[in-house]
Image 1 (spheres, rainbow, N blue to C red):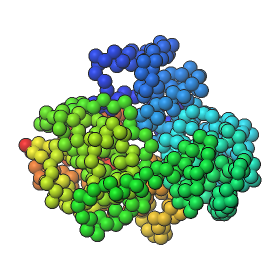
Image 2: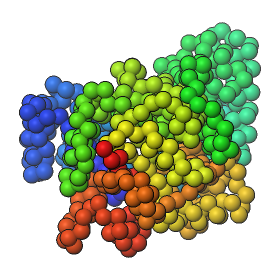
Image 3: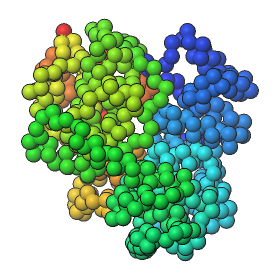
Image 4: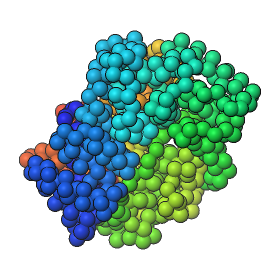
Length: 587
């Protein structure tokens, strides 16, 4: 996907390095034939070949995605939407790049693109539904498969789309307050929007009159449930769905009573997400062993943040992943780098240090041959989310334990690989945590790390200063207010970060209790002091290709950190998300 809203929306994308099927696989050959036809603009052949492949393997994510691209080029937007929705469910990483889902929606669903234009022009005024959709009614968008899938799968990481959904939510709430029962289309869309709001942790702006309406409707729902009316009022499902767009159902005082009644299937799905699954996570707390004490003051503050806001929330595990060896993965990712192969395809021991809600530990267990994963985190809430989300097929490969990285030196374990991306920069002294992890790494072991860049986060640093000066707290209400205030200023550029679009992620981005940033020279000094070998930076496919060309033209090595520092100085947004890189311990 790219940031521009092109008619062809998501670009066809090959599998991440090391995760594609062998070339001898008949399905892989068929996929390559279809891809060649697509690249040659032979759309009829491409459609025929992708359909043939999907008849054999319906869950081939990239074939669904690419078929959607071709169908869209042929003007068949309805079927394209179905294919994109299927791809998003199967392989959410296809849409990870900022704007990917929004650009796709704009291409396949023109009413959404027009509504986004109107919503942005009117903001902060919330347009009623008839003005937002130019009189076309909710039916103009409510049945679109890609829109419904997005609402129930990933945060709407786009300010224009967020403002459309914020306006739609207010209109639906006002309609629910009239007591009119909704038809199936209205109820289904409202339930999908409620699921979106739970995924983004109710980050959308809410006006005082909306809050007052929700208080009134919540009291009314509680009274109705207490009365035990039989049959139930016809508008009860719409009443519950409207409340679920603004409040997590598991926090309602009468939440258990919601499970004792029959509901339409779309409402049941909301109850599962907002009530049953949080109850499952609560029940899992006793099952997570404690590996170390958590005594460091900063560690305790960081743990509290992630107890309140487990980070990040996710819905679908990456699909269609073919595991490969760590050696092959590194060789394909860094063809010009020197490293000593581990030679392990069985009993490959991996520590995911700071596993959060489990997306990384799940990816490691899926992606590497023979992986046995120990996943450690400070936050019990995050670990319970991770354990609930771990697919049954991976449960035996991952052990989740609570502990502090700073205390792991006392644990009698060692590992072939340690993955610790986006964690150490939340310590008082990141180098101390890095040294502890190195003590657990076997000779010749591999480490994958991620640190914030001092240059790359210049705008985030300014936004954090703005937030501190104005006294915003980390409460959900203040995060909602802070986001909207930032968007009115030149600092609104921080919305380019995907983390801007949910409560826990925005807190992590802008209001973290502890943040430090590094420079490439500081990273180089640590690497040299500890006799590590630098293998390379993780880069997106396009960026990697561009930098390989730049370095080759100048005769530089891709492992020359002095050259990388010069490049980042000239192009300070190169590592605006993080430095993510690989190193190896001497054998």
